[in-house]
Amino acid sequence: MYNHLNNVIRQKLIIYLKEAIQEHPLLNTTVVSNVFQPQGRPPTQIIVTASSGSDFRVSLDDYLGKYNAFSIVAKCAGFPSSSIEWVVDLPLYTGTRANRGIYYCRVNETATAFTLDPLYELDELVDVQFDGTNYYADLSSTPYQEKVYVRSDYGSFTKDVDYTLSGQRIVFDQYVEDEQIRVFYRFPGTLFGPFNLDKNYACRDALPGFAIAFGERLVPNDMQGILISDIKEEVGEIFGGRYNLGLSISLYALDEKLLEKLEDFVSSWLWENRRKLEDDNIIISKQSNSDQSNEKEIEIANIPTFKGGYSLDIITEWKFFSPYIFRVLDIESVFYPTVDLDRPTDSYSYSPYEDRPLVDLSEFESS
Image: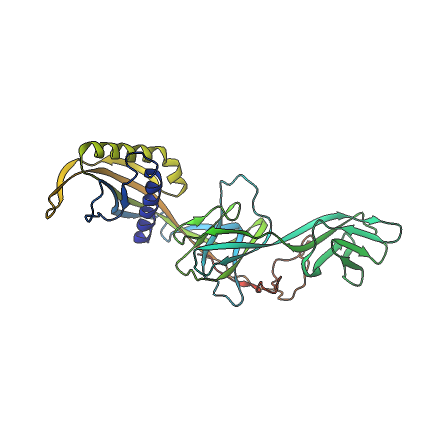
């Protein structure tokens, strides 16, 4: 855990500093790395290394509590379904969350990008109308495979017995007392992506309101289903803790003026981007300067080097999600009402497209 956190935070700082310093008019050739590069020595270098770390336990067994979420990750039949490490709700998200449904996450053949293929779930109340001959109701979308669940206050309707479905219109074969009926169905949406994939970082841009993280078990051409609900449900338990890490940012330059500009740049960037780093769970609790020195880093080449830098005390947290194992109550392509009869149960699975495999709700991949 300690090594992994150190590596991720160090690499994150290196990426951010690389992106920022490329826009500097004098320091844009600076090498940013975790290892000093003596060969073909550049005028300036920024080296980010780890120096220390200690674990802070929030409880004896690291247990934090129950986990309630809008999202669950499920396996797809015929695929390893191991690429996604976890999907979590973004607690501070203020926009419109992704609509309820199943989002098929497809990893490309090089495991460098992924797409989301949505199959939305709609539970809508529609008006019953009469055209002089038949009672009918128009849906807002076309149900896929003509699979719908229709009910009223007086009970449910059976397809091809009580009504027929033609595109977005339900035509009833009998008199309907209700002014409105409730209809549940699924319909395909537009493909999202592709999105860049990095197994060290969570993607927050693909699915509105959610973060998707890929882990070490990333597999090319893999597929998993992300199930999004419109209500929060208890889906697992959370274990977690905190680490206090020490990082060193060493600065190298061939003259004092360059070193001064490099120190000013790094110091300003750290202070200006503290909120951005905190969003990535990198909290700088202390920043101190290291003494400047003049050294000969390469004795053979006899090249003098001016060295400075900063020491950072960083607080970061880790969490482990332990999902509950859910049971599939129905594996047919049929919708069954729940106890309150207001919506069908989510405990089913079926293949919505020929090229979309069955979503197996009995095993969840989330850690």
